[in-house]
Length: 220
Ligand code: ADP
Ligand code: ADP
Image (cartoon, rainbow, N blue to C red):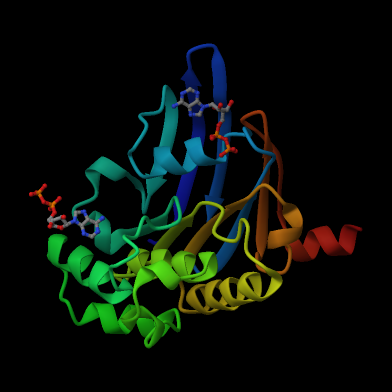
């Protein structure tokens, strides 16, 4: 049951109501764009799904459970929250090997995920020469190490050039076609309208729209 479910989520930081009663679902085999201006509550929602911030109210569920109740989290959900912090002298492949090793995943997964994101040869070079797009793809490769059916990606195309955005777009389409449920955030609708099947738009922590992209285009 590879779904992402947010139900009545509410999260306050001091006087800021970051997420204010948000509900939506992401189905398997789809890319859902999670859109809203900076400060709208996207990261807070993703962090709640990943068990990094406890909700004040409501639920953030991965395959029907809160993150902390997952038996094998790395096999159930992969995430990219920030561009990978890579030591410039380190090879991308070694970074992934270290991650696989430290999470008890088979090291052969590293070559599988590098092939998935098209970085087989680039990952043998030192990270100091990587573009932002390559770092983002390496971050997605890291998220895929456990071959999870659910992916959460926070602003993966922010700052990328059109070519880099195209690359991520095709990658996410392919990963969704394999049956994964993908939630991908952006502060710019235009970055996701060609990528997403579905859009969840939020503002000030509240739902503004929850619509299929085809419905949205036909309504326009
Ligand atoms: P987005 O990802 O859409 O840019 P965030 O979820 O990062 O939005 O932030 C939503 C609101 O919550 C913002 O007003 C932000 O400043 C605030 N916020 C987020 N995290 C914290 C925190 N750890 N402490 C205080 N305020 C926070
Ligand atoms: P410890 O449990 O001793 O703190 P870690 O598991 O954090 O060790 O790290 C094990 C090894 O991996 C160390 O040599 C450390 O320098 C290296 N390392 C730590 N964090 C990272 C990272 N994000 N990427 C790659 N290597 C890391």
